[in-house]
Every structure is written in structure tokens, then in C-alpha cells.
Length: 116
Image (tube, rainbow, N blue to C red; front, top):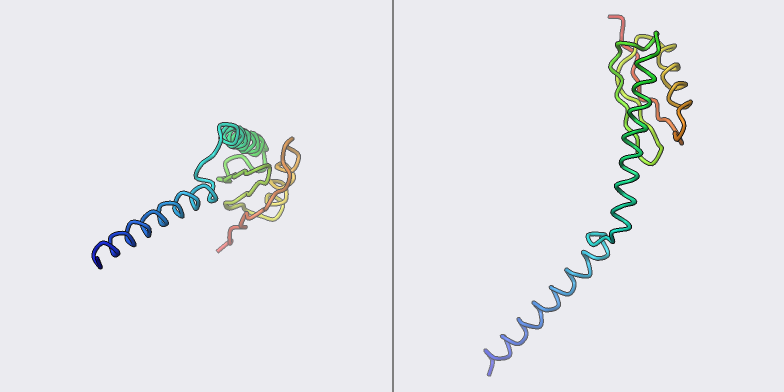
């Protein structure tokens, strides 16, 4: 009789853990609709295109050409990282990024190289 109770309790516990796991995954966003996936893919593509446009604009600028400036974009928010030679170049990169259509904000994390 005791063994049968233990078996029943283990079955109930396993079922509860399974249900909790399924509900937890659903709430965590593990299950997404095709519309959500399409939106996410579109946003990622737009972000990639935005970052590419900014990189091209930076490369075409005479004062920034040849500098290794990384551009990351997410939902129109842009982060610039890398090294520049002076404050003018740092400000110029910010100005160029802000001028690109679709940019919502720019976090300028460019570092001015030390002359030493």
C-alpha cells in the first residue's frame, strides 16, 4: 500500500513539474507566433541595414576614413565603439550617425587614443 502511494505521489509530482515547465517556457517567450518571428526578423534586418548605412557614411568621411569604428544598432538605437585620434573625430562620427534616417539615439563610446 505504501509503495502504491509513493508511486502515485511521484506521478503527480512529475506531472506538476511538466506542466510548470511548459507554462514557464510559454511565459518566457520560448513559443512565438509566426507574426512575432516575422517582426523580429524584420527588425533585425532593419538594424543590420541601419548599421551598414552608418558604417558606409563614416567610411566616406575624409576625417574618419581608415578608422576602425564599430557600429551596432538595435531598434534604431546605435552604439559607436572603437578608437579615434581626437575629439573632433569623435564628435564628427556622432554627428554623421545622427544624420542617418532611422536612427533614434546614439551612444558614443568612441575612445580618443592616447598620444603616448
